Image 1 (spheres, rainbow, N blue to C red):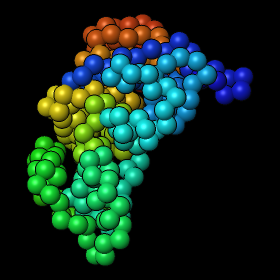
Image 2 (image 1 turned 90 degrees about the vertical axis):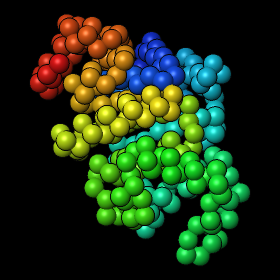
Image 3 (image 1 turned 135 degrees about the vertical axis):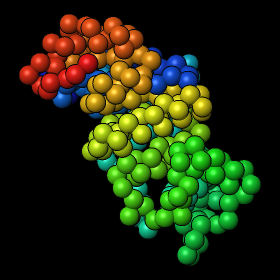
Length: 248
């Protein structure tokens, strides 16, 4: 990926298998956000290929990729104020599975149309999976940052994705919230048997919860492997020197 004369990404290759949570780390400016934009379809690379389930989706828009099973979260929760947690999950489900109902909701005053059986079962299952029961009928305006991030994850899952891109979901959380969310993410990936790529600055958490980790620096992949090999890799440690003290 080039921006004028600047090479933002060069010879970067990542593979995420079903049922696995894979980590992507690197210092500030390493190219992580650019790679996410390429994978999600917001940027089209100058060279290379993006595949989803074995199909080439390089030229497909972000919307078309979402329809094929790609979901993502963002660094800052993008929620609809005034709607409850449950309503967020219902809308997300309908965006993939019942788009005609989604359009009719726009003209329904006061509340969403009543969910059908399949929709209700899926939404209730996600509420239970993510332990959102106590706040299921609470408007998202009053939720903590940690809970808001869980709602974003639930909304992504409600679209029944095969691949989920998680963009710094632990950012801004305290140690307890971060640990709880990391465990919830790994449990969700395993139970839903989806592919998850996690971009995160919290390197120790990535090494604890991801089966494989890729490391970017200045737009190039400098290391990849299991957490043990990444933890002891001298190139990885050198990439973080002067940026932040990383306990690996």
